[in-house]
Length: 209
Image (cartoon, rainbow, N blue to C red):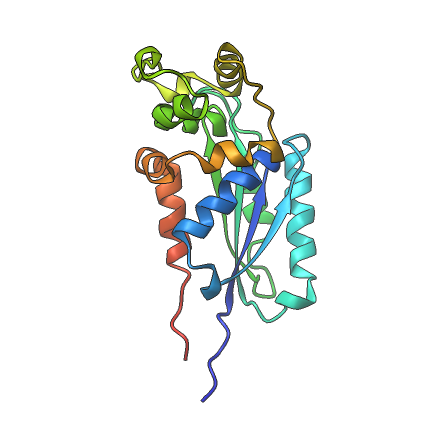
């Protein structure tokens, strides 16, 4: 008997190119992508994020490559751009309502947020050791306790640190080498949002029949 395709699939939307570089590495490491079909979409920033996410979901539903996916799980990775008291820009409850079951059963099974506080770069500071190593800071000048609260720092502070040691931090595709130098296991162990995401994604696997 031939194996059946997994009826579940993932639509992974990300804020920008920096997120793409990070989450490509992240998903390749923690998720067995061959077990579940995945499509990616760049939101190109958080401006008008609700409309952009809704448009991406509708396009995915209309994609002929995924018409046999009866359970679609959406993941949206973006920055809070502030501390945890800062309200997020995405109205996920409204999105869930828009795509919930009506007269016909919805193919959207879940809509999940991956919100970085303050931003994705804040999480990088969990691996300050490899940030220093990438910047080639002499060991005697590395202060591993300089950033005890990663949620208090952001991409601007990372950029300042880069400039201090003669490098330029630029968001986007150019972060690939830097992100590749980080210890993903260390970041993952300290970020509950990533752990929760992996748990949800792994629950989507089904055994081939």
